Amino acid sequence: MALIDGHAEIDDLDEFVTEIGRIGDETGSTVQLFDADYVAGERHLRRAVEMANRAVDRGSAIARDPAVEVLLYAAGRRQINRALETGVGEESQAVVAVVDGGDEAAAVAAVEALLSSTDPVQWGDRETLTEFFDIGDAELAVVDGDLESVVLERVALLAVEG
Image 1 (cartoon, one colour):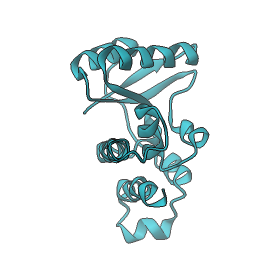
Image 2 (image 1 turned 45 degrees about the vertical axis):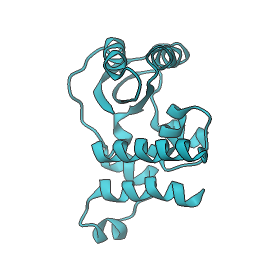
Image 3 (image 1 turned 60 degrees about the horizontal axis):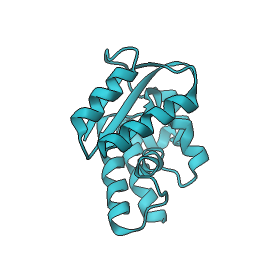
Image 4 (image 1 turned 120 degrees about the vertical axis):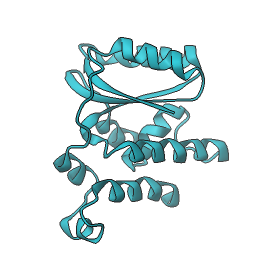
């Protein structure tokens, strides 16, 4: 699994998503992009990919497309429309891409070519994450303010809820 962060300038979301799908198809890789504000950290995405792959392997996947399954687990949601909030939109934004399986090197190169910059970006806007994952101060106090740990729980709970 590889993670790429950078900036994307997306004028036509449908065209951009089609290109991401083409990269996945041509390389045999699962490719998914996220708005960096919704990514709590590297462990967050690694756990989402692990859980999504496990669901696909067990035949218990929620979605037919492995990239959508990764999106659902990363969002900790079973509803695709709600999980899409964590994805990219038509704008200039900081993004984090996940590439898993297949010819990862070719997929990474193709994703990097789509981005306007591969300069490192800030991941995980605290306000965005606490609001999206409905995390309160009391819950954060239990884990000494480690927001990523709470988000990892949400990712893991999606498998339990199924």
